[in-house]
Length: 273
Image 1 (cartoon, one colour):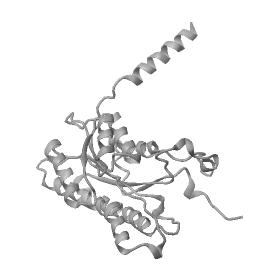
Image 2 (image 1 turned 60 degrees about the vertical axis):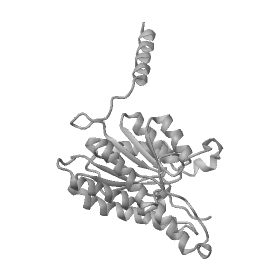
Image 3 (image 1 turned 90 degrees about the vertical axis):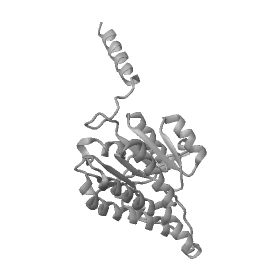
């Protein structure tokens, strides 16, 4: 009898897991509205999937139209083909969502590129290009959301902005000047925005991933994994789960923070023996 009871309970658990998620709603009963930049692949795609699976209304932009359409088909999220370094294109995405949804509750500034080169071989134009993709769009999108909130007749009492930073805001390898500067800028911009946007009930936090393998995870070596105190290299879902956590209603007291998710690597003292 005990065995049958356990089996029955396991079946009930699996059945509940298979049931569609109850949409995450605000007090008026409307689904929370999420916009993710760079959501077609990698960490951005994991974020789009996570919020879609939790019942949010999700939209994302990406310059990769082919992958964007695939992600949209997989998740049901609304896709805008756009290059975030183009101010007008990024603002247009948000304005279309304001026209369609009325507002955006959650903004995830995820889009970015990782391009490294020796300092003496890096041009000023290349440095500027990295900042125009990784850093400036965080300001552009956040500012545009603030302008929209300022014009609202009935203030939205809920808001979240999450910026994807990197552990390289604090530590570096040679040849990473553009990338490190962009992530350092995001770190500082995050706490500045948290203070400025408090007026519109928007919390602003950043997440600094360490090594997150976005493809070919099974090709990693045991050495890759075991150098991490957590015993493994990170996955995009590790970051997506934190995004969802920060957006829960009760977590509005986390504000202006940078959350490091790196398997403990930045806490590990390393000397060459």
